[in-house]
Length: 299
Image (cartoon, one colour):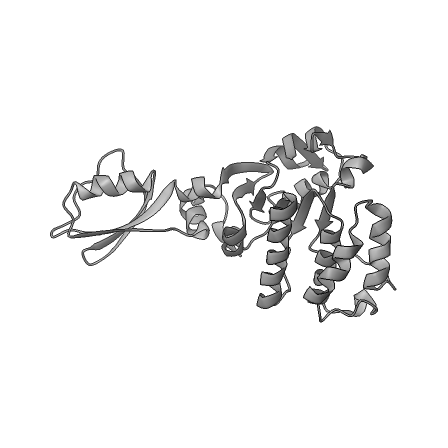
């Protein structure tokens, strides 16, 4: 559904995008993460047709995005910095979007009203809190019936109850309409709950692009204890990190979790336990050797 190939963009000699590639299949929820300055916002501005690329291709549903109104009608974009007309209320913004999107679902608009009880649709949107303004953005965006939903820090500023409600609405739309969702966020814990694919950007490129199941199946945490000292591990045992408390060692191992556990069991440990890794931990240990600050990705 989304295809970005060898995307290049320069600003005054600085290469913000350096041959970036991205592939997002129809119906996927794709999490885009990376440190500040990695190029996420620049990539999204190409994907939404704001910027024209210096080189490469940006396509949605097989068509180039830039200056293509037909393609732009297929996606909705919720930026981190929202825009509303100065004196517009929610009803007026609804009518505006109805003029832009032929598939705007008015019945859904009134159906979703009950999910946003704190928002007064007759009140000037700019007078609402940041969280309420974001609720209006989701409310209207979903009603455009987009094939692709592009989100930049989507639930920033929302309380925990509303965050859960927003994601429930998005997930229901994905299940019902096979909507493709691209989410740019620093919050890996939240992405782990909703995304099925993840891409990480660094210096204008997407350096890792995998399904979440592949990521979680490629690195594992094993706690193991032996009667004596830790025996010498096999040469092909790829340990990313090892620490110990007394006789209990915690190993972060790259590779198939079951195969790694099986190898350790041959050494007759006193105890052995295979533990799941969070998405945050996977990034820390998988990407810790790359020359950027992992902490910038996490929060």
